[in-house]
Image (cartoon, rainbow, N blue to C red; front, top):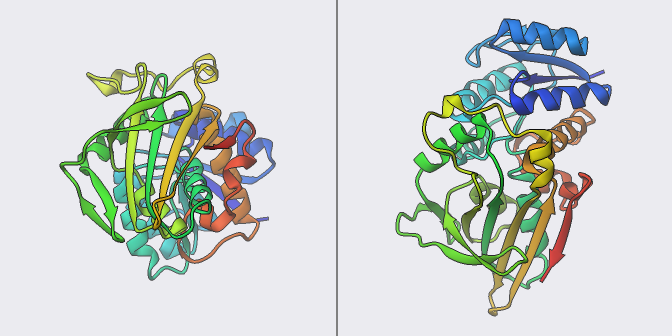
Amino acid sequence: MKTLMIYGATGYTGRMAAEHAKQLGLNLVIAGRNVERLASLAAELDVPYRVFAADASQLQGIDVLLNFAGPFAHTAEPLMRACMASGTDYLDITAEINVYRLAEQLGAGADVMLLPGVGWDVVPTDCLAMHVASRVPQPQSLKIALQVPGAMSRGSALSVGEIIGAGVMARIDGELLATPDAQSQLLDFGDGPALCAPLSFGDLITAWHSSAIPNIAMFVHITGEAFPEGDLSLLPDGPTQAQRDAHHARAVAEVTGIDGMVARSVIETVNGYSYTPLAAVEAARRVLGGERRSGFETPAKLFGVGFAKTIDGTQITDY
């Protein structure tokens, strides 16, 4: 039986994923840097654990590594390189665009699979991009916007800092370029136009590979208390179950064809923090089962346009 390692398993989302993987009966090893927290969770789940920093390789006997330890700017590269050295397929849940750029670069010569973004984002948006692209002959441009509701976890807040630090970019005629003068735009998630600010998520890489649309721009619509301020280390691990249940997640994709035809589709899912561990573990389960290709991959291209909807509570509406 093939073995899954969840790295960062004692974090807010990693713990939910480890519990879900155990419930599914996967052959699981948990890992991270905090021996006390790991030992406690391993005893609770009755699974083995390994303690190591992301720059060390302890992947012997591991077929798939699922990385939940952010900010991923610090963990993704050493773990990807360790996976390449040990023959282990790499998955993570990041939205940080520079991790996708790295995976794209490393994947060109990799014998293992590098599959970042198997949570929310980018599973729903990647599948949405492929879906809406199919609605227009010769699609030429794509706009994707995320709607971020409710409270944010400490880990996500730290990752957002990495995303903002990367600067604003867009895909223009197939090339990823800096667009510091990009303006906010009105996009409709189903309730009327909402002002969305430009921000560079991993979809600028994944949507290009999945849909082949040459011009792609990314945006975000913030509601409520989504972007916290102050000392981020003082934030709680993440929203409570009740807070997650109160806020579904949505994204919109709008595509324009070469003839000017415009199509818009909206995807709605359960809260992103509830969606991520389910989608990530399902992706890992499929990879363990043989659904894999060497090199850089995207969720929708590997698992198909319907992958996002395999998570209960997910629907796509066309406009």
